[in-house]
Length: 273
Ligand code: NAD
Image (cartoon, rainbow, N blue to C red; front, side, top):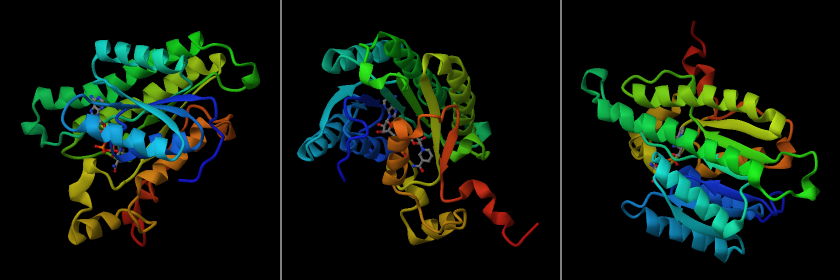
């Protein structure tokens, strides 16, 4: 990863950063000069994978630490933000990334299937955004940033904030909710010079959607939905996150940046309709 300085002096928290888009974003933000907190779940091998992300950042000369927390739990989020401040003393950028899928036909979707996805993908993002918004007002003043954003929140949404998704009504509802959470928050926090935006990835090669790309047949089917003709890589999203987090996008707030190879362009209408 090329080293830059556009985020020098800024502290960034990336949730769900032990894999996929979160991992790539943590690495890219650190390469752009940010001090990064790599959040991960306490469960499974997430701790070891998060530690590997931190090692990778440090090997490249960047700064990062791990912090365990289930972002769907208010008590965990409180402790997570305390850990960020204890370590770095401030927070400038939140990448609200952690997310899950739990698909089922509607008749078989249990309340627990519904609730867990809403808890992580929507309520968890609310809890972290609320804590970040509070922290931005408590940050030590930085005279070098006069007139620029005092805080920056980026939601990792999905093309499913606009594309309906049969058998994943919980996931699509959570991402549709993120669209209005993001816009309402951007409207509310604009006067405090906090920028709030979303990135809506299309199909990105990560563990969350592995069955959609890990055989030649499934990949060929997936590519029919992508006019640009390739699956996305986590780094495609990470580069967009660095831009949205940087002053290069200072006048951008309340918008969703689709990073989807054209998936939202109704490709099935090409030559039809
Ligand atoms: P991923 O499974 O690699 O990453 C999700 C991460 O979130 C994992 O590290 C997981 O441990 C973490 N996580 C899950 N629940 C958590 C919790 N309660 N607390 C803390 N961390 C938790 O998949 P990904 O594709 O990198 O997903 C990242 C985000 O991108 C998600 O919000 C997902 O909905 C979104 N997204 C992904 C795609 C895609 O094609 N991969 C497309 C659109 C949107």
